[in-house]
Image (cartoon, rainbow, N blue to C red; front, side):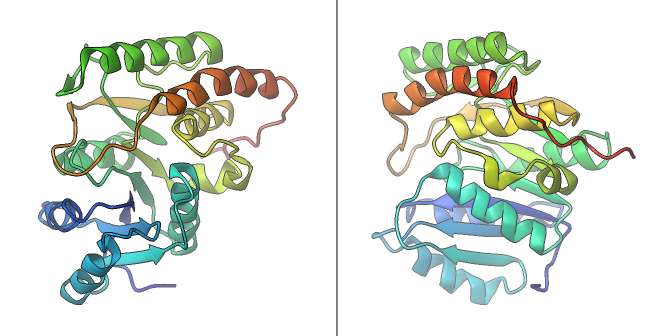
Length: 251
């Protein structure tokens, strides 16, 4: 086990994020509560991992790096990060983008929702209080908003932002839901994680955030990612009829 500096860790997957990675790390470490950071880098050719390694000298015990051999997808990056974080006994485990589309200050809201208000999963939600998205093309806003509506309809999830990628998990969730059995690797991964937590009986709450589209670097989003989410949800729902989910242990 590593010597950790906090009960909480923020997992940030990276691929070609040299413009953002140092700034996002410093922003998280500048918060009034200490959060450790785990960067999962998929062999970025732009040198993202080298920047992180230099910063590890400045933040020993708080900044960790896992380097993977190639671009393997968002879902597998988070699963690798979840396993690492559970093995190292972090209590609160966060997903966050590297590109400042998620405001690091909102980590505190998600932590409070789990650590002080009793949620098992806290979702940073773009849609719980209207549509809080900045600098997205209107077509993408509409697609994302109605994709979440569709997912709610098919799955029965009582969550406004089912595809959100800014999430805090209390460790027992990740220890229970058999993360090795999560099938989807792209953005449908986010839906499957929430749906599985819901089926296992965990309490999911939404915390309103403002999502700001990246300013620096290149977006990884494309229409095939949404396609996976749309068709994957039907498979997810049908599969749930034949699957026995592990249940949350009584408190």
